Amino acid sequence: MTNQYFVAVIGAGPAGLFGARELANLGARVALFNRDIKPGGLAEYGIYPNKHTMKSGLRKQFRQIMDLPNLDYYGNVTVGAQGDLTLDDLRALGVQAILVTAGAQGTKWLGLPGEDLEGVYHAKDVVYFYNSLPPFSQKSFRFGKRCAVIGAGNVMLDITHFLSREEKVDEVIAIVRRGPAEVKFEKKEMEYVIDNLDKAALDAEIQRVAPIMQAVNQDPEAGRASILEALPKALSKVSDTRFRFEFLASPVQMIGDAEGKLTQVEIEDNILVSKDGDTKAKGTGNKRRLDVETVIFAIGDKVDESFGLPTEWNEFVKNPNPRFPVDGISFESPFEDVFVGGWSRQASSGLVGIARKDGTNASKAVWQYLRQTKQPDESNVEAVATKIRSLGKPVVLKEDIKKLEATETAEAQRRGIEAFKFDNNDDMLQAMGLKETA
Ligand SMILES: Cc1cc2nc3c(=O)[nH]c(=O)nc-3n(C[C@H](O)[C@H](O)[C@H](O)COP(=O)(O)OP(=O)(O)OC[C@H]3O[C@@H](n4cnc5c(N)ncnc54)[C@H](O)[C@@H]3O)c2cc1C
Ligand SMILES: NC(=O)c1ccc[n+]([C@@H]2O[C@H](COP(=O)([O-])OP(=O)(O)OC[C@H]3O[C@@H](n4cnc5c(N)ncnc54)[C@H](OP(=O)(O)O)[C@@H]3O)[C@@H](O)[C@H]2O)c1
Image (cartoon, rainbow, N blue to C red):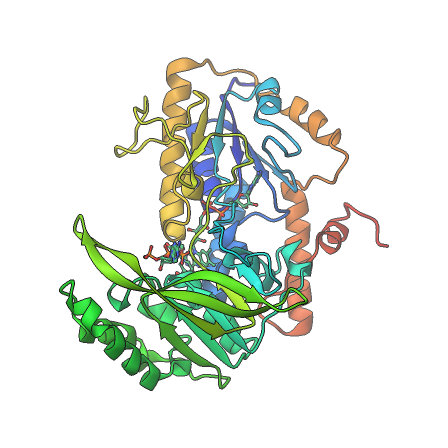
């Protein structure tokens, strides 16, 4: 057996998979641990379900990575202070460096009154639900007739897409703390929902906020035009859902009935103030209530604070003076053998391609660290296998994933649909022969 560096990668989303590929190609032995049974992360469980071409293209690339001979996959294994394995467990198994690419799994609650009411959710949970990720796929959600979505990013539009094309609710109100000039979403994503947009309401809203925009030298008409850029390629609507914007408004509390069900969201009007070349929203004190049965926060996520790495401002702390920067970026945690990449380095930031590059660069930093501080060793893959067997739960290996994919592909063909996914762990484990049929 040749000596190799032995690295653990935590999380098999795009950052982890491409990071693992980089390390494996450089010659390391890689143990890739993933909380979910299937690899892919948000590419599998975040990207809108009907983006079949994109999803199948990514799955093909992920399969090639999983086939690398010096990469071992351990799915259904959570790593972290409260996980199946801790970082110290990994070190005790002979792992010489740890790359954390576990995404941003924490929830950015704002601490507003009424966040615990039935009907108040965070986008990640909803997205995981409609993308069939257990256990979110088994939870029940209350999508009422009138729904508010907080935020103006692509996730807000994905949720609006789901509410208007799948749930076919009566109304979706996007509540945006700044104005039309600061929206983050892209034209391509707007095309899915713009046929449901109430254009007269948009005009009235632009008129309402125009003086506030003009006060910071913004052009209201340019803001309106950029939203409407999606019109020429609008996808025809399939429901009468009325989609509209409430600009310059922040939620301040959620109000419920005696049964704890959401009935209203209270918002505070904002003005814009210029600061350091950017604009900030500032509350005016004027509050209004909107009748809604559902509020979904699509304001980005934060890293998992219970993971066991120090956190600050929703992210894992990075070494500000990295020993192994790549493109000037620090991928280093305060622990010398622990590195971070993808959304675990910068929460809720960018597309799959960005996560891929970030995971790859994080691995370059890991490799420099190994080369400068460690000697290649006999990777203790057997010790990992023994430890895994002692966890008392089914652990999914790469051969198992092949079986699962074959079963799901066959099921999609049988049903005559583009893709089929089991929405619970038991069915997946049974399909792989890791659990007996009940
Ligand atoms: C709703 C939504 C839609 C999106 N749509 C698009 C799109 O259409 N196109 C596009 O290019 N980008 C899209 N993105 C962005 C893209 O999904 C992300 O950029 C990318 O997935 C981030 O990759 P990551 O590997 O850093 O994290 P993730 O994809 O979140 O992967 C994290 C992985 O870590 C695992 N994990 C978590 N915690 C642990 C733990 N403690 N132990 C072990 N494993 C763990 C998870 O199971 C998961 O597999 C979307 C994002 C969202 C939220
Ligand atoms: N189809 C796709 O390609 C696709 C789909 C989904 C996601 N993604 C990507 O995934 C990443 C994450 O997307 P995202 O939509 O979650 O994030 P995002 O693009 O950063 O948008 C977050 C939105 O939430 C608002 N917000 C943040 N904190 C808030 C608060 N406390 N109160 C009120 N509003 C608040 C932000 O407003 P401010 O601007 O004022 O901060 C912003 O409008 C992005 O890079 C996105 O492009 C891509």
